[in-house]
Structures are given as structure tokens and as C-alpha cells.
Image (cartoon, rainbow, N blue to C red; front, side, top):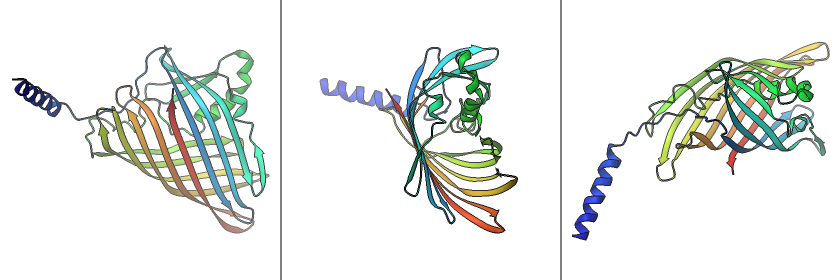
Length: 276
């Protein structure tokens, strides 16, 4: 009898499992007081003609805290901590203090219903002078979405499904002397789901092209960049949060300088991990 009960129970669980909706929708969910900590590491490697290899890296943590809604905006407060930022050219190492200047200063991001940052606000009037720096950090390259990490088409997705997301004419402002436009065409795939762990595994392959204008003295250098981007994500299905991201990008920048056409290969490496 005990064995028969076990068999019936097993069949019941199996039928329930098989009848479950296997479709997933990937959209961030927030609740007031929610806090999530992430650790980020980035590295950019350039091969500059004549000069040689140039490396620029950042290592820091960031605390995301959702504060609720106000005036039609969703308010997400970010606090950067534990910043290590440096650049290496040949045997010369330089510490970059621009990101460190934002460390331990909370900044509120006002997000619209499409998941885009409308404006930012440092917490505390004494830090108002950093508003442009925070804008550069959180709005300078407007490719991230605070609601739809894999685009708005990431709904009713089954294991093995792929979907696309396109971003055209994305504004880039990375410094006072650099601006441009970027286009990204992405294909995402839901590779697998580990139901017991509640983790979805998603991969991304993107074609990237951008035109950047760099002001050097009285001259404007126009740079044309093309390349590919690949990323793998672990996504917490229950919490609707990113667990980790591992991504790499390869691009080639072509531009005119000193009456010559020059090409600069670039490698971008990014790792993000949720921490307790």
C-alpha cells in the first residue's frame, strides 16, 4: 500500500509538473524598500596605433534601492561603493578618480514607464555639483532598461526560443569632448531553466555599430565603430532579478587622423554579480 501511495503521489506530481505553463516573461519587479547589491568589473583594451596597448578598468559595487513612485516616475536609488579605477599605458599606471568621486553618495534615478532614466538627482544639496557626473554615469550611454533587461519582446518565452531587440540611434555622451550615436541589434535565447534553483539561463549575441565624434583641440575626429557583443545571463525567476552577467565585445574603430586612415581594435569585458 505504501508503495502504491508513493507511485500515485509521484504520478500526481509528474502530471502537475507537465501541466505547468512553461512560458516565461522577463521583466524586473520592484517593491518599496527592496535592496539589491551588485559587484561589477569592467575592462576595456585598445590597441592604439603608434602608442601601443591601452587598458582601462573599473571594479566597484553598487547598491540598488527602490523607493517607490513620485510624480509619475519610479525612483531607484543607486549608491556606488569600493571603487578601484585605473588605466595602463605601457608601464605607466594611472588611477582614475572620476568614478571614485561618486563613491558613497546616493543618487536617485527617476525612471519613466518605459524603463528609461528621465533625470537623476544626487541625495543632498551639498552634492548637487555632481549632477552632471551622475548623468554621465547613468544616462551617458542609454542602452540599459530598468524594467526590460532583454527588451519588450521577452514575454511568453519557452525554453529554446529566441527573440530580438533593436535599439537605433542611441545617444552616447561619455565625456565633455566625446559624443555620438549607437545602434544595437540583439538576439536573445532562453537556453535552459533549472526549475529547482529557479534560475533561467539566457544568452545574447548583438551586432553593434556606432559613430563617435571626438573633439581634439580645434579638430573633430569622426570614428566609425563596428563589432559584436556576446553575453550570458543567469536570471532569478522568482525575484525577477539578474543574478550574474558575463559579457565580451570586440570592435574595430576606423578614423582619419594626421591625413591617414587608422584602425583601432577594442575588446570590452564586463562581469556583474549579485552579492548578499
